[in-house]
Amino acid sequence: MTIPRANLPADARLETLAVREGLPASPWGENSEGLFLTSCFVHPDAETAARRFANEEDAFVYSRFSNPNVTIMERRLAALEGTTGCIGTSSGMAAILLLVMGLLKAGDHVICSQSVFGSTIRLLQGEFGKFGVESTFVSQTDVAQWKAAIRPQTKLFFAETPTNPLTEVCDIRALADLAHDAGALLTVDNCLCSPALQQPVKFGADIVMHSGTKFLDGQGRVVAGALCAPQEMVDSKFVPVMRSCGMSLSPFNAWVVAKGLETLMVRVLAQSDRALELARWLESHPAVQRVYHPGLASHPQHELAMRQQNGRGGAVLAFDVKGGREQAFAVVDATRICSIAANFGDTRSIITHPASTSHGRLTEAQRQAAGIGQNMIRLGVGLEDVLDLQTDLARGLDALA
Image 1 (cartoon, rainbow, N blue to C red):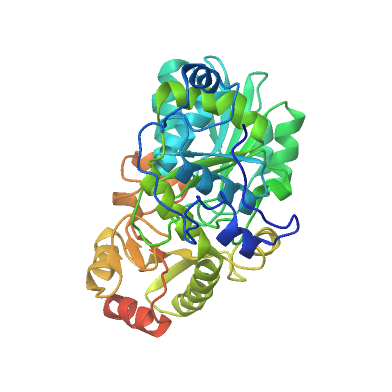
Image 2: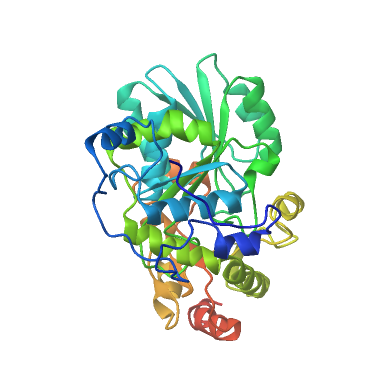
């Protein structure tokens, strides 16, 4: 027995795969995927159950291992990222946990950008450091620093591009070549772009990590994560850890993310256009010191970003106001449309003070090394009218000018 696939043409394009990839309909013929809210699955006899639990027969056996809704989401996301396999997890951080547990052991070494999400730094340096996995944090954009950090024990490169919140862009191809020459793997966190804008495997990445909580869901409803990788790696490295440790994606959350993927292309392109318009407007505002968005010609990695990100800068931007924490808080508090929260990728625009929220658990020295000041504000641009968003930001910014 093999779990069947959706009957699609071999040359189906991304927009079609985003809507149609997954599983065939059940005998009931539903057009929209059903919900399979079950913890276990019934087998016709004991011998069949034994074969299935021993992985000798492909089937759904227990929802900690596999579930139709999770499989639909995994197949759909893998198709969009251009990988042969994918494994869903309970959150984006659970995906990184699964990544390290599946690939590394005590004594192994990770090289990671110092500009990645704050919780990623804490997980690698703090939690895995206790178990003998060592990490070195380097400049996101300086390939020479990545090269200098390589040791004989280096097994994994981890990059987030663009980074959150500075939107720094790394050269995926250069890092992939460097990692492979050293016998290591490159994982790219693709949360800020999503496959709507960027497919890291096209530039040599081995694994693509996602927080499905962001653009993949797209409406701020559920928490989810995923690793996209070759199917052989998923089966041999990640599935055994998942079965033992259970950082499983719930069927309902998988169903929500799979539905979100159907509109991913439309949403991300529209949000990216709005973000670029806002970034250009912010650059001209007298109360703004600096704007961080890869779509701007002033961005240090603008040309690289346009090559890697299908000509768009994405829907997340950051900016430094003139002043410090007090002035940044004043701008945030003056908004009436933007949601004050620590997320992005939502249809509703979200405004955040990174130094006190998403990166608040880092030391001040770590924040400074990453370039995150107390005067920085991050904006995850949604689908509101861009003129309304400008007016919303101007309430606070005009008072500072």
